Length: 171
Image 1 (cartoon, rainbow, N blue to C red):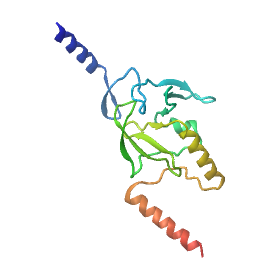
Image 2: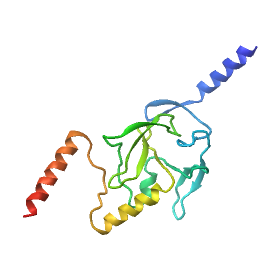
Image 3: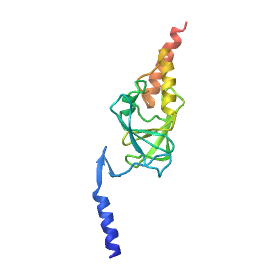
Image 4: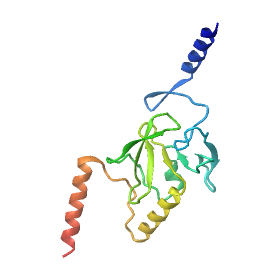
């Protein structure tokens, strides 16, 4: 009888699977903090916006679903992608349970974590304010890049050409 109950639980869990961006994932009732690992994320609303975010009550980190960061902050990078130098870290995506990738947010020194599958972004406490402060300063100096750099060899070639043009106009 004990094996039968265990088998039933496993079958029920398998039945709760769903598709998300082509990957088969188990639907979780609670999302866990990528940093604290066992603390459940709480839901909150962003003031003056109709956007629901998830945050950790313990470490104060924030989880942004795809596109939410752009809606919360006008200074956020548009269409952010995982950077070439990103490394897999021991943090699990609260949404799809994949490993997150860590990299520096464009034009800042803030280290963020992003999921390759669902494109969600995890910001540790204070990182949103840091990103906004640095990018606001860049905006005031007309040096803010609104779109993420193009990755790979194509991006490097474009950046090289840009540098060459800048050097030619410095004379």
